[in-house]
Image 1: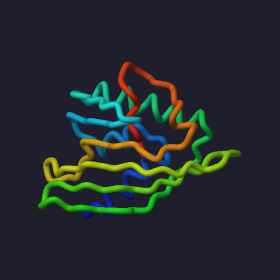
Image 2: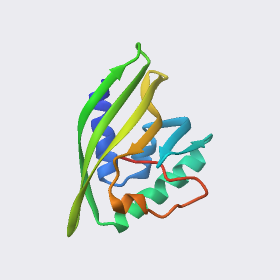
Image 3: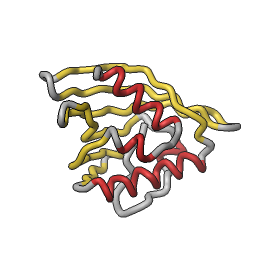
Image 4: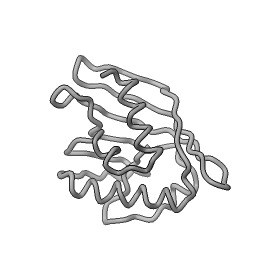
Length: 141
């Protein structure tokens, strides 16, 4: 599967706030940088708990769906890549969010998986999101 097709599948799961669909695009260990703080998840169970809490928070913020533009895509050989996406999140009765997220990907068992995200260029609401655990939330989008 191409990276473009991978991110389109990811967007579909994210737009539905479907934790299982989003999680199917992740692998562990997984790292996230959120407001300069680094967090790492060693197992899918704890990563899923954080991802589910984040998606619930998004739902409470009026999340209605997401679209993206690929700003950069850098293959690093056949089995690794880096990408930056500009996201636009439609919200019910509220202004949309626009933010960028960087992704680090690797091919695992022949499938692309995200193993790291860098969340930056966030909206004010996202900067104050509730922390569901002792680790900063992972960016779903």
